[in-house]
Length: 474
Image 1 (cartoon, rainbow, N blue to C red):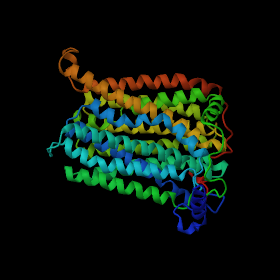
Image 2 (image 1 turned 60 degrees about the vertical axis):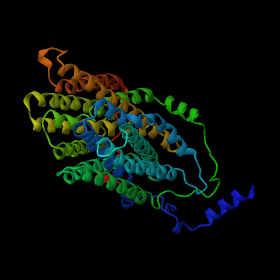
Image 3 (image 1 turned 90 degrees about the vertical axis):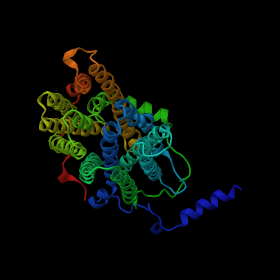
Image 4 (image 1 turned 180 degrees about the vertical axis):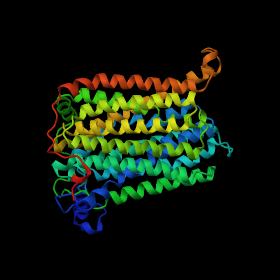
């Protein structure tokens, strides 16, 4: 029996790389064409995020009449896996499969989770719509399972995918590679938001189901194309795990200067920018009377703002700007953006609301790129996975907790306001939304307090390491 696994492993290694979907990476450099293809996993991430946090949550809250707190709980379910991103990253740093890959198995199985979650979602929505005779609790359970699977897959794919990209990129180009991957994420978010908005102009349940099913097929197809012939196989010792334990790797990462303060700033900033994720579109629909198509296009506006934030941060970082100071600047932009959204209700101005959404995306884009760059500066090449996983865990945990808290606060305060318990001057459903946006402004100021010492004491980088699009490899 002991000889069978060895013979199986020899058989796998004997298969020519031309017949394997993830064959050896022949070149030590990373041409731009190969990098663009690898970045497609970020495009699929953006499309899935636009669907889950944009279209589906709006439909559940407005069209299906579900409580925002319940929808927020479902959207926040992937939070269960968010703290595990550091562990996933560490495992992809050290694991050796029979086929000789470290990152690819995590990306592949994460893609299957995303596909499975999106495959379940249409059936859950059918039950929740009341068009079937099945018990309603099955619809809630199926929707929760769909969000859980899709979210867990997205976390796994992004953590291992970012680590793979930094593995195969020359060390000097790693920050620029990560930046390009972030751009592709935002392009997927903007393209997904615009595409869903146009497709759902004449909204009906059948079209929504077709949109979800199409997104599932597109997501797994993009991830397969992204993985094709990217990661080099390890010919020796592929079936064993090597390297230090997770506890030792985490201790090493935590011992790096400013790491804990940086992760706290990422947590608070992500919570501040992310609390409104499931409320932005319902706010436009319920308070400003915007259509499904109009509110869905807000996702595209938000993503375009984030792209502008990347362009601005890339320009400044290429000139040697301190990334922590840029992150502080992004916080102030976010304060103006949330203030614009708050004033959109009393002024009944959809354009002011769109402007606020753009500024929120702009500030969030700058904050994400700058903090991710700061995290990459703390990583050794062998620790790409755990470093990116720690940043992702702080980011996703902060955003996930904030999403649930935002939905719960909105429901509680709006119900009290409409019932007249807050006084005659506040008998408006917009009161709950407004309080959430004010809390986000407070969180932004807390982020500024945490990140301030880093901006004050961290020396500016030398501008000889360019961070612009013109310096991409290839």
